[in-house]
Image (cartoon, rainbow, N blue to C red; front, side, top):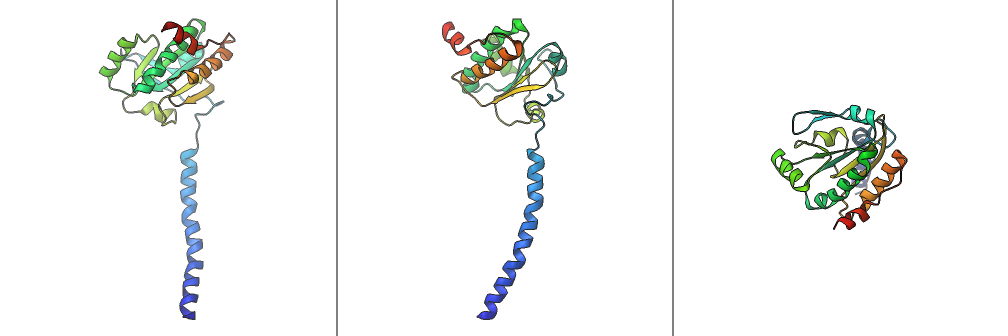
Length: 193
């Protein structure tokens, strides 16, 4: 019995270092996966995408002209409700230099119909394979990236908020960048109804 106990104890002692060594490389892999470069304060990634007419939209060229709001989105019910606030945000600040770009992860034909139905005025493109989400290092839909003139990321707002509160927070950041008064997009949308 004593011998059985000592053998079990010896195996346990030998197994602990092996288990710790096995955990080491996994932690390194996780660290590599979590190493994000698309963060607030960093330069926006190089990004080009074609719009529905085959024209190339180049983020660097857009940010040379002024701030850009990149919205990675879809046509789900939540994003659909939230779009009204972001479209209002775009309309209110476009004349002051903001460019808005919506990138949809839906089939082309569905997006074309959706854009007409919603009377979308901002730039948009379709990315059914999700390459844009990989470039911007996010899996959350929607995610909004506010990028300053010159290409530095000023704000990242992820998640769906059909109430317009998130859009209002983005509006505050846009107003700071443009050195203008903030537009309350929740109020503007309520006034339109």
